[in-house]
Length: 207
Image (cartoon, rainbow, N blue to C red):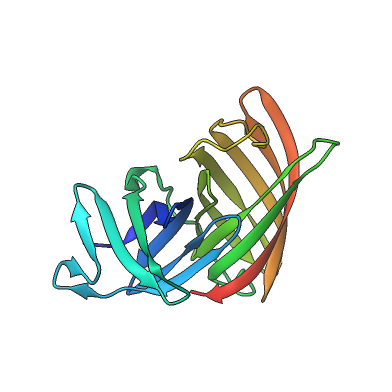
């Protein structure tokens, strides 16, 4: 059955991109550093409109109104469910479920930063960008939240500007939250390095 968390490779004409996507209950929410992806799907008795199952992957084809002469194609590869940690809990005054943009900045004079998307849903974190995906959990109430994230690479980053250098990175964080967004401060363990960072989240779509 279609649904779950996926990494995505998409192509429009000669242009190729990568992102992450969560699908469930007819809704699709995801994105990367440049775009948010918000859409719907229809399951036609085990088949998908404009899509088909290919092994463990789903392949889609379509057209964009803005570029009608170019074929749009995408391949969605599921992230292994056993890698997704058990969700935390959200109490009164906790962070809102939804799709957020995230802008991360390194501290202590370390250059670099990241942008991406993060889907928060009842204590579970799913997210990513064009080269990495995030899995994690959080607890939240009374305008505060804290949790942990595992950052893993799904597509090698272009150039030499990858903040985490392709490492599997564990991140612990805490911060404040409100109705339209959140702040966090975190420590990331990337290989033998311990890095401090801060991030701003802005709500784009309630889940």
